[in-house]
Image 1 (cartoon, rainbow, N blue to C red):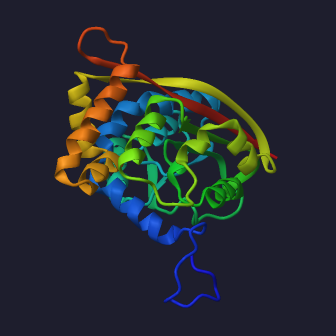
Image 2 (cartoon, rainbow, N blue to C red; image 1 turned 90 degrees about the vertical axis):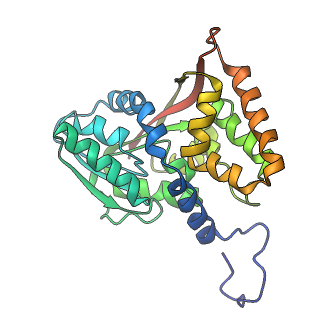
Length: 281
């Protein structure tokens, strides 16, 4: 953001990106496709996270950057009182439809992970699966999660690592469409060092590497789904001139080849993530 003393005509310093503008672009990116098409395949991660948190019936749970509600539904299936939030209303509607189909009671509310509209210590448990890690202001998002969590409560997250498939996916995209200067990589949320920086003052951190396996009909099928529906990939292709798009396509298929363990023409690609449980002091 601009310094308070700057005039509208002064440029923003290179090491101080305009996080408000970046957030607006990110929101547009996630809304541009339909993350629910991809998100529904990740349901097992929400279930695993809820087990790692040892959720109990009746606990109040906040899902931050919930997407189409994987962790939301997992917590509601365990008879928790769940509030599901995201800054993309269309994704909340997908989560609402899923909850209704299963007869689950969930409160859905539009909310910015960097300015949660809840009082201090409001929730027993805060969760986020591959969501809060994409906030532009990482420290602010972390402090908000700590703020709305009760003392003795828990914060649970699933965050992609930089070494895993999705981390490498974003690195590959970055070679074609460079990320904004001065913005911290989302994959830092998948490192113990960055988690310590953001959360150690407020809680005790336990983190374990896990693996989610992407299973698709073929690498081409994965590329079709992600290009059409996964906002960051969809926007990356849209940002490139048409002659350069096949180059990105080839690089993504090469990346899949490095990770694919199917051996039969389908796609079976493990992607490492960090399963995080923080107990707030």
